[in-house]
Amino acid sequence: MSVRLDELDRKILVQLQQDGGRSLDEIAKAVGSSKTPVWNRIRKMREGGVIKQQTYVLDADSLGFEACFFVLIRTSEHDADWQARFLKALRDRPEVQEAHRLAGDIDYILKVRVENARAYDVFYQALISEVKVHNVTALLSMEEIKSTTMLPL
Image (tube, rainbow, N blue to C red):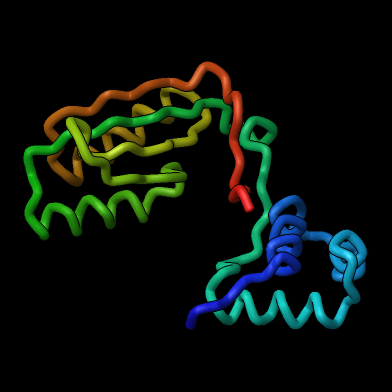
């Protein structure tokens, strides 16, 4: 289902991205509309797949997840069975916040959030025990400069 977005839809989406917990009244006021049309547009965008889910962004550090690793993976395996096992291993691990298949020398990059380096090693050992990888490079993020889920509408 394709949804056509107009300027008001985009304004609503910006408001939702900034704080998904805001009331319909607050959103309507911010976009210069009333509650019912805003609700109808949000419903239409949910049904059309523009809005995938409503969620909350948690502070990792305050919850004890102080280490963020970017993991670069090279593999010599590319068959369907290996890929299925690899993707399952990633999906089964809550530490993996993002996983991307890349073009170029590196096959995959993962964003892994854990408590500390020891917890990363536990993650790493479990991963390599399940799937064969050719080379793994882990890069520890020293400082998060920017992180957002907002799209530039």
